[in-house]
Length: 171
Image (spheres, helix red, strand yellow):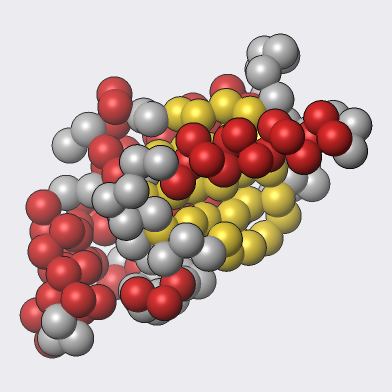
């Protein structure tokens, strides 16, 4: 199975989701520390040239690969990836399940503004504190989204490619 977390930039909520998925962050009983957030792989590290690229985060405890992708505002990236995946799975007779999970609904305004200042305008002294504040606000929601994504992945749906929009996690 392959999990692909996706959002606008692919460097904040997706990085946190991948870290939760891979158990690199503690469960959500408490707020994350600034150090834990800043040290998450790819957190606030990607740039405009990275949009549309898949980033491998690791393999989970069940041997499933975890990726992330930043799709900008383009609503067609994930559906196009689904169609390409289905084509390849059929052509090469591969029996693999792929779950695309949208982390955008978990992003609070502080994280959006922080990403704009830090990644867009390169003003880290404003952006990074906002990103950390937003991550602390959303860590429990992101954790719950990840747990749901894993649960859906482990179900016996006949679909090989599943897209989760996750609107129920909207902040």
